[in-house]
Image (cartoon, rainbow, N blue to C red; front, side, top):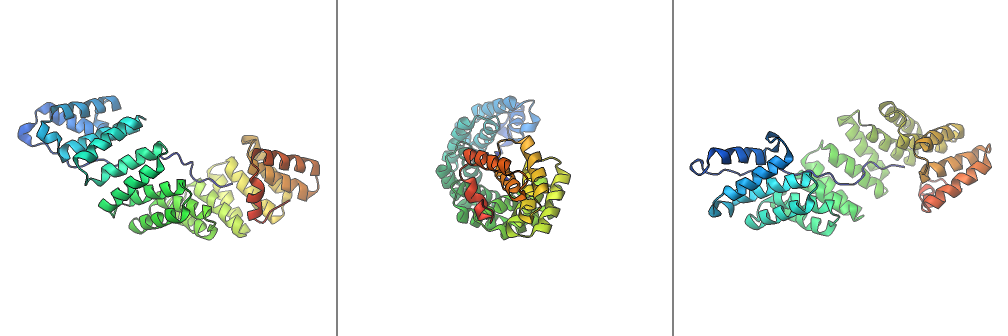
Length: 320
């Protein structure tokens, strides 16, 4: 019913600082490559930026490469590989950067983010721990570790990190959205609704935030407020099947079965194999007493797609 984030973690990579070859040691070509490597937008293509990083590494003297300078270049090239989808090569560069400069938090943070892309959550947690130890004021590292705990279904630990991130950056929309999701998973729907309310104040055009608060308020029984949220979400994103499902669920709880069926019909026209929409429509059809046969067929189809849908609706106070 409510999936705020499709958790394929976007690579949010921190840019290294500290590249400063002494002026007497740098031909003009090295200065150009440094700019193309670290400020990759100055290069014609990502491949050109990677080539600039590689030339810069080749041009540095052995004493210079085994330093913070070299670590920064490896991080920059790792970022470029990561954005290109070459995650293993990115991790190899972050490994080298950490060997050269083990006190650089950004290298641990970026390697953790790349490891998350590979699904290596425990290794990512180890790196997030180090990044936070080296830079306790880094809100992004707290959000990253919160995501890792979320993937492990350790919602209490995830919430602790999201709380810390929001204390550091109170209006962080990413942290608010993800804390809202973690609160829902933990069954803390009132807190989730508060998080989405704060997010809406920051991003009033965020249709997903409106829909998620709609869902949370529906579960809490605040149904008239729920309808207002669902309607605003649909105004911002007309015909969105997730929001149509949410409003159908709200009408179902209100006992307005024909309106529930209409919304579920519209949601299923766009996503015909959604078990929640099928199960909700089945309940609405049965309770309206206008189409019991169709209702039973919907319930059977929903349970075939997801046997857990029965327990999910039961948690919301709705059963056969």
